[in-house]
Length: 325
Image (cartoon, rainbow, N blue to C red; front, side, top):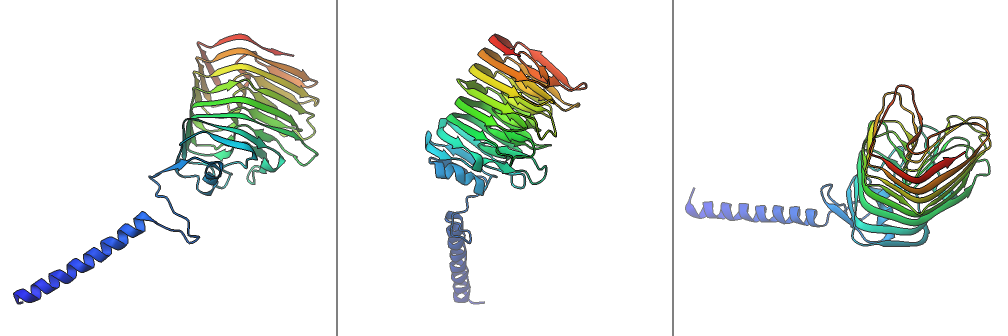
């Protein structure tokens, strides 16, 4: 092969290589889906600065998200992020920012097609996930059921966490939450209503909130469970360095079943669960309970503990906190 032929071949190969690299870089720089939206690589952090961007998490729950500023929802009605078939399994880092002034209403209530239960919250169903350094404030729901809810309603910031999932909540705050719900059966927890995931829950704060729940127990498939932080706890978790301050619970149950109430958790329902509760501070929080049924009340920690479950309490302090029956 002559020297000139070798040079020609090398030049051709170089052109081909440059064209391939250019095509690759263009694809990575602006990768498009069929609907012409930008597809973000899984290892890239998605920045959120608006309400529409926050609600778009529902389009892909398996990513890392970060707030870049406070978001004022201006009274918008939110639809839960994550469902039983497509749970939220990403991360949300609030970077210390706040999501405020939003509403949950009847349209926010969804049905779990697997369990037949109902749920509502900012997050509907979550799997392996982490939510941290964020505040949700000035929000609530005013809902009176007209007979459409025929099973338990799981209501909380997060309605349900899945079995066998690992969930980490850290430095998440709720303030000025106003709840008024009339329904037959409910599991309520300010942070997680039906918590079936393992993991840690630390630095949570519930402040200046009012919770009014009225139930009549017509459709009873499980005990009514109401907890300040968590409703029904169904897995081993650690709860540490949380605050419950300046809150009021007004609870009425007209049925003849059972209702479990606690300022940290409503019920530790799993017989195999080991729950560590430490360094929780409660101040000026009370629950007024009117019940014609069989109620299990715990002044501070958990309303009901299953016989084989383990609840370890360490260094918890409650001042002016009580459940009045």
